[in-house]
Amino acid sequence: MNKLFSFTAGLICGAVVGAVTALLTTPASGAEMTAEAKRRWEEAIAEGKRAQAETVSRLEQEYNQLRTKAE
Image 1 (cartoon, rainbow, N blue to C red):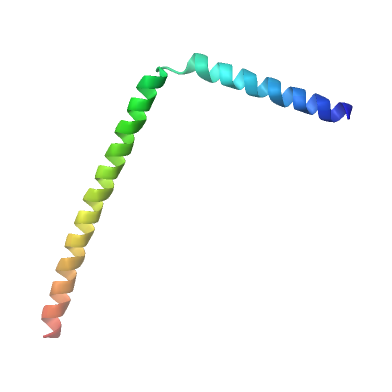
Image 2 (cartoon, helix red, strand yellow):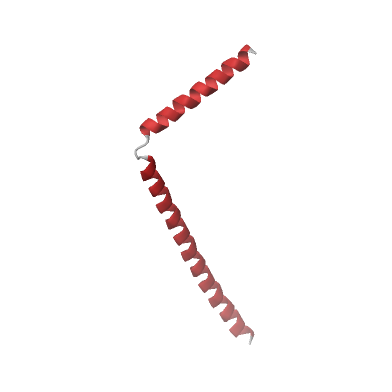
């Protein structure tokens, strides 16, 4: 029982120290970090859509080439 209590106390203390350290060393406020995360998400979505459009275009060209050769 003593080992379990020591482990639990150490776990809680470590979590608290980690959380405080993260809060103190974070270079931006919560609002700034949220805005940055949203901006990155939107960039990732735009890049994904751009890649999708390029792939669709490339596949359509390949399809048309194969179709022309088959005729």
